Length: 398
Image: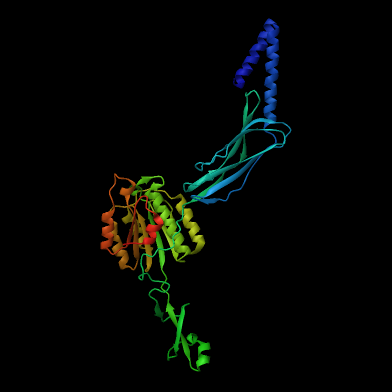
């Protein structure tokens, strides 16, 4: 019975008690009136003294990581709570932190919520609310216990130990070193002084030891930059959920960025076509990796942007000796020809091709795209659904 229905019944009983004077009506009217008043009073006191605590989680987690929350509900009043329902409004899939229990006077109830993060994205933990009421179940009151806070689930990072698509051809760090006429940070040897050498290039310790002027020879260190272009063209994606070109592409992009920034210590940039505000300029180190993973955690296909158009937009941003890693499920045959112009400008493209046919049998294969890339001299890696990505990426291109 709802409160207004009970109030109407009590009013009717009082009218009949006064009009008929029959004793049972008086007893029922008084009993229900007292019960109604006690329920209202109980409700006023039932929410007092409740305190909720939850362990503070970091703002970030990673796919495959298990998060654990410790939650507790305390009753600091002398009045027992016959029933309390704690509801958690978290949006993280599979995270259930709710609880239903009675709480005695000055009692503390604790529980845990364990969840494995299975999908990247930005989620909320909370808000947490408590619902309680009177013993008769006439009234209910809801009160907030804790506000919501954000949790960013980063994409998985594969443990790559090698990613060498250009053995012997990629410049930088010992590959293709050249003597420099300018002063650089890399001194490789010393030689005899010849007229015209700058005095600043004299190596004084060797000069003092040999008794003749010796000058330093510098090595030109042709460093390279890497830009990862993730193709999230809405019309090119295939598959669903974890078995989709979208998730495979994000995983590959995050894994390559981690390897290149941590093990190769290169400057890495990120561009994502088909997603809004998803690009990062070149930078190095762990902070750049954090930024890349944060961007990849929330990108999704939103717009139809053909890969050829995306490459044309990136062309002006790519400097000479830049390696452009393209991760795409595109089957269009127009974009390989765009790479020819990039190669003439000194950009070194390579492609990771996600075969859409393996993700959705109703779609065509990208074998012709791979042949077109081979004709342009662009290395490529073919990835199919179910492939061991670490092995495929480490094996390299053809």
